[in-house]
Length: 228
Image 1 (cartoon, one colour):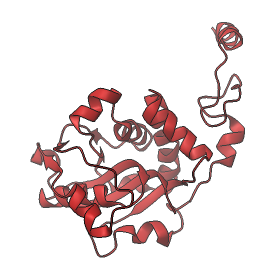
Image 2 (tube, rainbow, N blue to C red):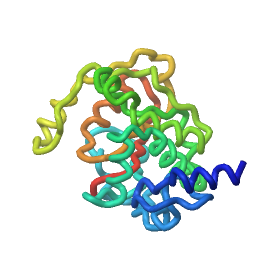
Image 3 (cartoon, helix red, strand yellow):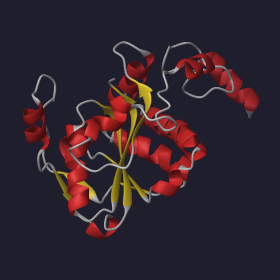
């Protein structure tokens, strides 16, 4: 079947989701050059204060780690745009799996019992057809061999953008927007909250409070990218 795959690559060339160049036979979604060039933070190996301190004094978080640095018009933004707006959930799963391999190399799977992607509001879910955070969570779950859950928490309201809001306005904008619908899946669990990009952190903070109020044991935060 390899010859058939190569034939399809000639007729319908697969391209890198980060740069648009043609993929070689053994490459998947991201070409080797872009994979090497991805702006990794290595925050899972060495503490990065700009990430680790994001929730300091707000909610107790055991770890706040991010795969890559986000920059406008960069390759990371291109990948996340493909994931969120171009109907390519496979990009999220792939990025989650790549990062999961890195995390497993440092034993991160020993610190978490359950992975939960930040829920989308049902209206947004219907529009997009999937939750990009769940796609990332699925990839992480596969690499780390940790279960991920999509039905334990729901989002009650669709929030406005956080851009140009003050710290107080940002939190008010996401206050009480989540609800635990299956407390038994949350109670006494060490939970990793997963999202695509860490910006203000207010939405993740709100979800973390909801989970802790439902007796989650610990909260960690994992994102694919962060604005640093």
